[in-house]
Length: 438
Image 1 (cartoon, rainbow, N blue to C red):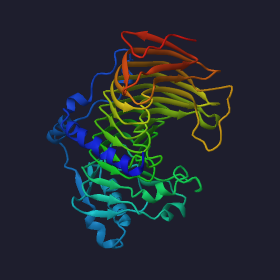
Image 2: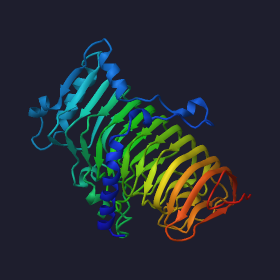
Image 3: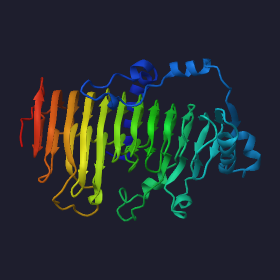
Image 4: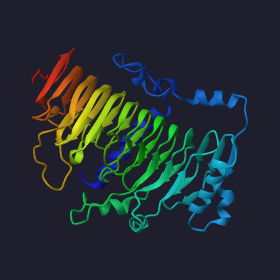
């Protein structure tokens, strides 16, 4: 499918689901976790508009509001980066009370690569983005300085980033010069649009993030994170434009997001534990993935993940676990449940022979172990003849895979289950049927 058709498919899918997600009851966005999980696997406490109302009624000091427009006169007329940094410094350090960094509505601000750093003196800090932030389209801004992030928040506790504004990554030049779209080009890692590093008690809510150079949102080395009501979009042909990427983080809850990109809608990689994704719409894209894990013979661990109440439309994968040969570690206690799929290729897949490389990957004697994986109440249509595919390592088999009430049918054709080196237990009614093997 060409770039134009993929872009049209993205617009059509969003038009169908945008109204539904915009009117989702906030209480329904945070369901109780699967009963088989330990209590701590339920993720961070739910936050909603009710909580915002309670905060407004709570006695205490009023937050100090710092408007970036108050600093624009001191900045270059075409580049607002310095104004944002000065406003951040004031909001972060001016008092021991809550503070707000305000980006006004109806205005567009050009930001060069910028890092908002903590720790902050303010007890809580809220970045209210109501306007539009634009990234420079010239790749040399990053390449000349070997930078891989556009907007970074680093080492900040009790940070909230919200407001309904837009972040535009202007990533087109990165996509057409990618080695994945043009094999004659040198492979270069593109910048992430919005990067959170070492941010605990973090809330990211109600933003539109589009056309990132590569990944749109990264949560790394953070604890107790809520990401909700994000609209993340990029053309279906744009390479490596993951929606939300979680790395080395604990107790992360992603809720009520619409993600339409050219790569994984959500990717969860090593060091991540007690992760929940609920009420996610995904498509186009590469589905919702655990991994990849174990690249370059590395050790990796992901555990206690719950993906539920997701809808996937026209994606190249559904729910996927992908690991490289030669790695080590574990992917365990992972549940995918209450998921609907429409015209999805590879709806359910485990691939321990994952190889995203220009050169062939040879068989190795070690692998990231995959065990205690549960698929429950997954329904919909598959565009591939193999709807369920477990490709597990010859050296480290997949163990403890449970299929319960999984029903996938073909788009006008019969579908099957394929498995290799996997032990599968079937409960309830499942189609296609995967018999146990070891």
